[in-house]
Amino acid sequence: MLEHAPALLVVLPLVAAPLIVLVRREAFAWLATTAASYACLVLAVGLITRVADTGVISYAMGNWAPPWGIEYRVDALSAFVLLAVSLTASLVAPYAQRSIAAEVGEDRRYLVYAMYCLCLAGLLGMTITGDAFNLFVFLEISSLATYVLIGMGPRRKALVAAYQYMLMGTVGATFYVIGVGLLYLMTGTLNLVDMAQRLQAAEDLRPVLAALAFITVGIGLKLALFPLHQWLPNAYAYGPSMATAFLAATATKVSVYVLLRYYFLVFDPAALFDRLPTRELFIGLSVAAMITASLVAVFEQDVKRLFAYSSVAQIGYITLGIGVDNLESLTGSIAHLLNHGVTKGAIFVLLGGVALRAAGAPITMSSIAGLGRRMPLTAFGLVIAGLSLIGIPGTAGFITKWYLILGAIDRGHWWIVAAILASSLIAAAYVWRLVEAAYLRAPAADASPAREAPLGMLSAALAMVALCVYFGFDTSYSIGGAREAAELLLKGQQ
Amino acid sequence: MTVLAAHYSHWVAIFLISAGMYILIARGNLLKKLIGLGILQTSVYLLYIAPGKLIGGTAPIVAEGFTLYSNPLPHVLILTAIVVGVATLALGLALVVRIREAYGTIEEDEILERD
Image (cartoon, each protein chain N blue to C red):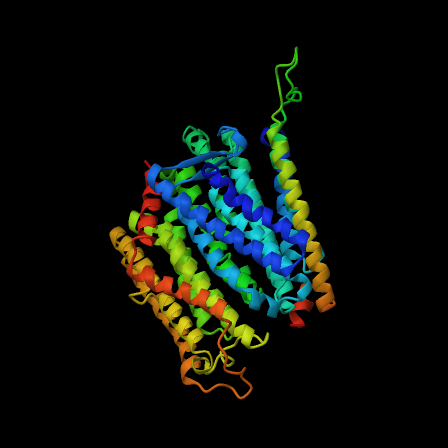
């Protein structure tokens, strides 16, 4: 049984989804989603301990030996991402009943759970698979489920947001397929490990570089790499709160993982980083994202959109680590997949609680006035998570920035250190606006009555906030896992 | 000229990809955008399938007298990609129907006006 854990991790949520659609009962949908999420968490924990003990796990799907069959491959990097995704999944969905009930019509609630399971299956599949085309299929499974989830948002703008995301997401996925097609032409294999070995012998580099370009743009669209991030703010702002919380914490992170995997373990990084201006490109785009997206967030009135722009900036930190390209910076990047996941997950679950009490009205700066008195725990959680976005010492965000700065200093890029500090200052400005509205302003006359969010949502969100603080003090899991993953990536370079 | 002739399937694919992208970006009608998306996705099928065909090659069945086989794997991959494309198109059309119900139009600029 345990040897099939890599397959089960994907199969369980994948099977849960059609069951939910067949049964059509909300209670069953919740039960199946919760069971699948927790089972995935248990399996992911099991896998990460096994990888730590015995090294890379290679699972031959259907007993067809790789590279002919599809290989599921769990190494230090994918185990880390699997754990991050299943951890947020099990913290979000099981507690979101009230939020879903408030935002989605009764006849469509079971579909939210079904799409959530499909999305989870797709994300876990993207992470665990060792096959380039299989990765595309999982990418599309998770993406299609995401478009539906966002389209089920409470306001009609959700439909337009979902449509736009669908166009850009599909272009991204199509570009990825073009890239994989070119690689397949050059190597005759789809297994990523096998492909990496054969690419070293490739004589004509031009198609390989074209493939690299297509994969970079394609996955860049999916991970909202600046300036390909236009779909993200609307999708996050208008989707159902629970969907936003889950997607903000996981979807873009898994795409970053795919990019890391291709850059360091498939393409020859010597050719990639030394023959092309990859470092400069990533550093430039990341710094632009960190500064401009944070600036937009400062002037945003809609709170969900504010945090969506903040996500674009935070993704900038993650891709910055790829551009700086050394052990410290990559450790920071990979750790930020988890650190930012729990931070943003907490924020969007808390905002879900606020939206629930505001009875569907959009959450603006004026509607959260006096939140500190009306919903004290929610406001407190938002502040702590906000501090983690800024990167105050004692929170998870600080640890990431610390490693990114160490990496930048090691390369002698002092201006990047300045850019990180500037971006943190701008983050402080938008978090301060929130604090000011929540604690210093009196509630509006028509504000919703003073009631905390439902206990389940609140405890899940505060658990994530606690993780934010925990990862700020004890880094043995976050940085420990990330460092092993970064070492794995850099070892691929030799 | 020889580059053009030897790789004409690639040139067709490149033209179709560009045309699809152009329609996707330039048209404001949500349905026409989906048509562009369809062309973009379909052109990738050509990019995969054409190189799998060897001139004079047969279906990959072991039989006497045949030594040259075409590669069947691209066909299998594209079969999957077609399924994905159909699902995407179906979802896109469903969203357009819902947008039309909610806004009464499928022109992008009019939708932006009505928000």
